[in-house]
Figure 1 (cartoon, rainbow, N blue to C red):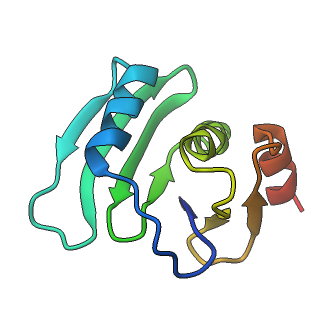
Figure 2: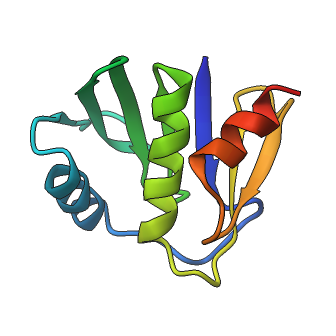
Length: 120
C-alpha cells in the first residue's frame, strides 16, 4: 500500500527537490536514487534497504510531499523524518492512498503514534 505525506490542503510552500534528495542521501547514504524526467508531479524516486525490507518512494515536486511504500514501520519512521525537514508552522498529514486513515504530523508526533493510529 502507498502512504502519502503532504500538506492537508493547498499550500504555497515548496521544498526544493535537490535539497530534499541531499537530505535523504545524508540520512541514508546507501539509498538508490533515480531522477524522474517524464513526470509532471514526481522529480525523484528512491529505494532504501532497511532491516525490515525495501522502502521505496517518490518526491512530489508540485505538492512538496512524498509517497512511500514498503514495511509500514519504515513508512511511519520516514514520515517523522520528513516532518523534520518541513518548517514547524507548515501542517503535514500522513495518510493511506484512499484517505481512509489520516494523521496530522506535528513536531511532537512519533512513529509509534502513527503506527497506533493505523491499527484502529
